[in-house]
Image 1 (cartoon, helix red, strand yellow):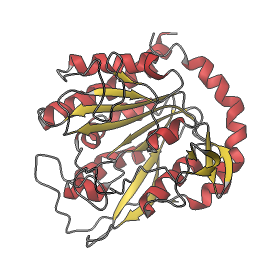
Image 2 (cartoon, rainbow, N blue to C red; image 1 turned 135 degrees about the vertical axis):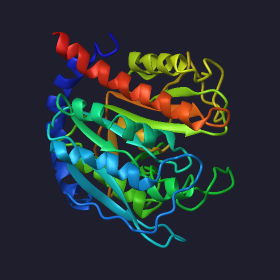
Image 3 (spheres, rainbow, N blue to C red; image 1 turned 45 degrees about the vertical axis):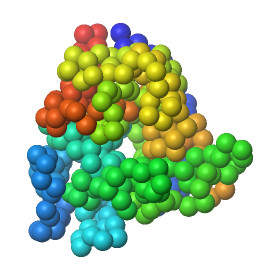
Image 4 (tube, rainbow, N blue to C red; image 1 turned 120 degrees about the vertical axis):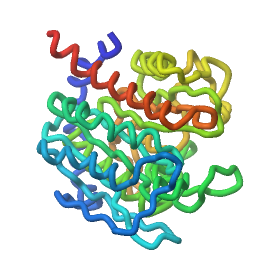
Length: 337
């Protein structure tokens, strides 16, 4: 059973949750405001490549409000060069406690994940009846609308410092000085707001499992990052690889990624990349020069599907299958007991 570790992990969170409560409460003032309303500009033009208009995504996500979920406006994002703000939102299940965190839309030229979440919103609602769930479905809405990877540039480049909304270097410890963060400040207001929100909500919704839906148009075979405690041996990561293969997504089973990270059976173990996923798996963070407990989710998975040679609908189908696998693994075993 892929989630045989879960009961032990939940018990462990019962102790650790008390540890992170004080830091989470102190950061609560930095997190986004709660609001049951969502107002959007009237002149949005979503990039025309087959992706659904961004208004439809927000509409699908906010159907969770009808089932008692809480909508949080993390930030009204308006990067340089844009004419209006778009909200970065999160939705929280009425049930609190050990939680599943679902993230997507970090990079705007990766539309499959946000659309798969909208297609599986009913399944996510069911998951929220049995587990705490925190959903951050579209972390870079202007990127999605413009087909820009980052806030400041459309494409990945080794020469350009792309401002990722998931950058967590201002909270993660420097390798040479554990008491100092890798960066003096957040790379953008968006990165600051999203990471502060995660730390704030980790008290009520301590992450047990975190997934992040990604794509990559520079690869022709996908893989799964496993940043959690079990690394490349995490059974949920292996299940994800099988789901991708079953949905005709080519998988790179060995060798290295384009960043020279070793691949074992389609899985990459923990890496140091200053990402939001490293933050979700971290044991400690550095806040205002002080070390504090971090979320430390047991399982942290990042799904990378190849976007260059795989059409959008096939990628959406694969991400949808991954989400449905997650829900089945977390709900079905409980119903059988």
